Image 1 (tube, one colour):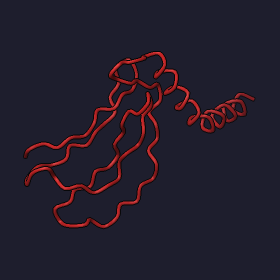
Image 2 (cartoon, rainbow, N blue to C red):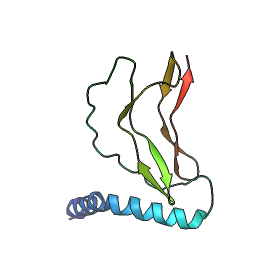
Image 3 (cartoon, rainbow, N blue to C red):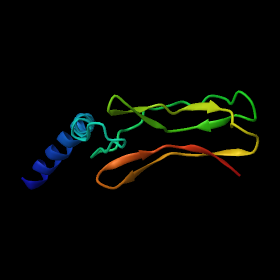
Amino acid sequence: MHSKWLIKKTTFMKKNLGRVAILSLIVMAFSLGASAQIYVNVRPEPPVIVRTTAPSPQHVWIGEEWETRNGAYVHTGGHWALPPHPGWRWIPGHWAHRRGWYWIPGHWRRR
């Protein structure tokens, strides 16, 4: 009996994970108001991005990136970009956890 309940609970949680993430974003956005940092309880899942062929050998792939817009995280990654200066490299963004999950943006850095 216990295993059936556990399977149902796990299935329910998997089906509703996206809803929980969106709801968490909305709740955090309203509770933080004009705060510069947005925290979420569940990190959003990035959409599947197909990496195309580089436009030139100088282009660098910018993978997963998130921006805050209107109090929510929006996926903006998955594109090719030229470094701002020759020899610079892309440092990917990443999720970090403090009071909740928050995004640390990627940036260009001199080698």
